[in-house]
Image (cartoon, rainbow, N blue to C red; front, top):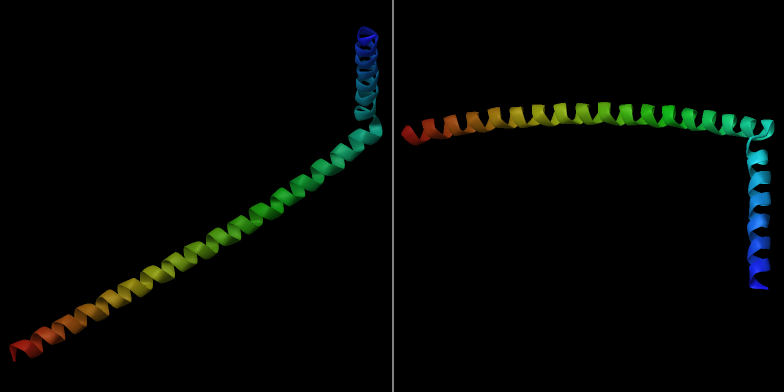
Length: 89
């Protein structure tokens, strides 16, 4: 009995698989795949735009941080120079 059950399950799977292939290759299915792919491409473009904006902002922040550090180094050099002059006088 188990042999017949296994054969029935096998042939049922083959029939179901064949019907699935027909369904997946139909015109309606291809149209749905096309729309889904188009939506994925639009989403990719949106994500890439956001990534570019974030990278630009990060570059601006880095440049500002470098400017702040340069100004601070100049101020510290001036403070050290004046403190050395007062120590010598």
